[in-house]
Image (cartoon, rainbow, N blue to C red; front, side, top):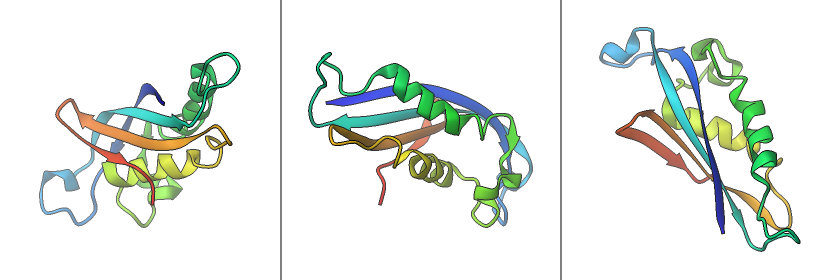
Length: 122
């Protein structure tokens, strides 16, 4: 059973050494979808409570919201591309969203309604 929540954050960034306009500072309203895969349900019939999932995801998203992502420690070396942002969010949630019953499955990031990435972990 796959259980997901959707959220979003706003932030600025620029892609260092990018051969085009994305090298200039600009911003996005990133859409984020976090999916947990449950092997079995609990006694209430849930894989993971949406409320629990939202709490953990929001703790990570709050560190990115309304930031210049190039100044965020996670992106000091790696460009704050959608790929790296998805990887960062996944790695931040990997341990907290892992029990005998469920584990983090995927993080999806969309810069626009028509482009994004899905990261499934290593």
